[in-house]
Amino acid sequence: MILQRRGQIVELVKLTRSVRVSDLSERFKVSEVTIRNDLIQLQKQGQLVRDHGGALPLDHAHEITALLAVEQRAHLQITEKQRIARTAAALVRPGDTILMDAGTTVVEMVPHLATITPLTIVTNAFNVALEVSTKTKAKIILLGGNYNQESSSTLGPITEQTLNEFVVQKAFLGAQALDLKLGITDTTLEIAQIKRAMIKAARTAILLADSSKFGQSGFIKVAPLTGMQTIVTDSGLPNDIRSALEALDIKVLTV
Image 1 (cartoon, rainbow, N blue to C red):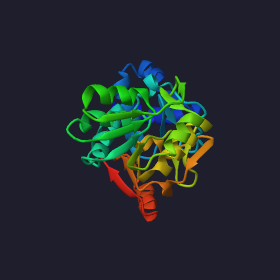
Image 2: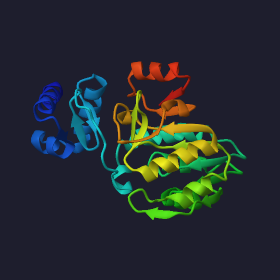
Image 3: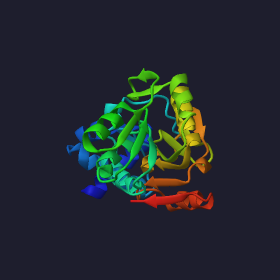
Image 4: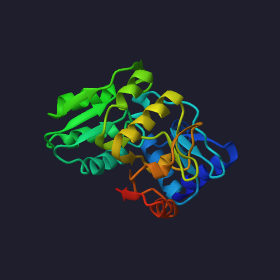
């Protein structure tokens, strides 16, 4: 029954060029959780590519053109995000000053930072600042700038200029899309500029990205992958991509 359903899902993806989890759940009379598990397994088998809320065929050149609202992104690949965040938090040491961007994977680090003290956290993300203030004893430096509702963060020249004044031990960054050739890409110039400034401000840049982000691209270049010293991802990352990253002298941590 499971194999038959998954086979039909693959055929639907090839035929329609795009499927949504909600539509598949209704069609096959199973829960959305079951469909998501189907898509995870089919992606691991190289049958399709998971997309936000659905799936695409392997030959589809997927370009992200818009940023989902933070409350929508927060629920995508949540299990993978939590495992990635736990591993990333283990890289933080007492006495560190770290940068945390507005990524929904990055904010999942906060509960694991509670016992690390002293700690200073610099962020432009309102969700990160709120979580840090309630769950840790860390000192918070909240970057000013123009508030962006979709990313729940400050952006723009003021944010960028302030970042230019900092030198921190580590920067923890999320990403909209990753590609071996194009590097890290995003959907808005303002977000890309802040991410570049964060990378520049850090001695070590650490990227947190679940495996669904790989092989996708936005239309604004942020930085080459070689700008990252470490990438933390999940076990769904294909071995060939991992090998290519390690050949670039990037440390890859999978969870």
